[in-house]
Length: 148
Ligand code: HEC
Image 1 (cartoon, helix red, strand yellow):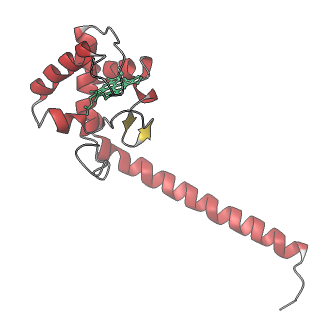
Image 2 (cartoon, helix red, strand yellow):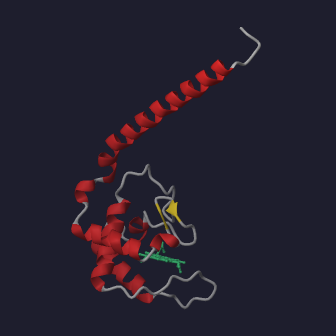
Image 3 (tube, protein in one colour):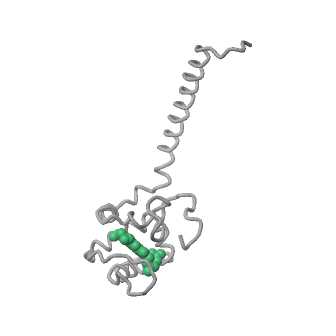
C-alpha cells in the first residue's frame, strides 16, 4: 500500500462516505415513515385534538413545558400529565384541566409560576383532548417516570 495519501484516496473517502450516510439517512427516514402511523394512532385525531394542538401552539406552552422530551425544561413534562392526573379517566382529567387552568397563577411562594391564559371552557377541553391523545403515543415509555 502506498505511503502517500493521494487526492484520489481522499475523493474516494469523501464520495464513499457521503454515499454511505446518504443511504443510511434514506433508510432511517423510510423506517420512521413506516413506524409512525402505528405509534401515533393518527386515526384518533379528532377535531377537538387538532384544535387543542392549535391552542397549545398559539399560547406557546412549549416555551416552558416539554412534550415527549421536546421543549423547555422550566415546567413539568406534559406527555404523561394525563397519566398523572387522569388515571385512565378522561372526564376526571378534563375536570382537573379546567380547575388547573382557572387557578393560575398559584399564589404559593417559592414555586415557579404558570401564567393565566384566560382560555374558554371549550379551549381547555380541546387542550385536554390533545394531551390525552399525546399520552397514548407509543414513545417507548418516555418520560421514564410518572412525575415526568
Ligand atoms: C411561563 C411558563 C409556562 C407556560 C407558558 C405554561 N406553563 Fe404550564 N406550568 C408552568 C409551571 C411553572 C408549572 C408548575 C406549577 C406548579 O407546580 O405550581 C406548570 C404546570 C402545568 C400543569 C400541571 C402539570 C403537573 O404535572 O403538575 C399543566 C397541565 C400545565 N402547566 C399546562 C399548561 C398549558 C396547557 C400551557 C399552555 C396553554 C402551559 N401550561 C403554559 C409554567 C408554564
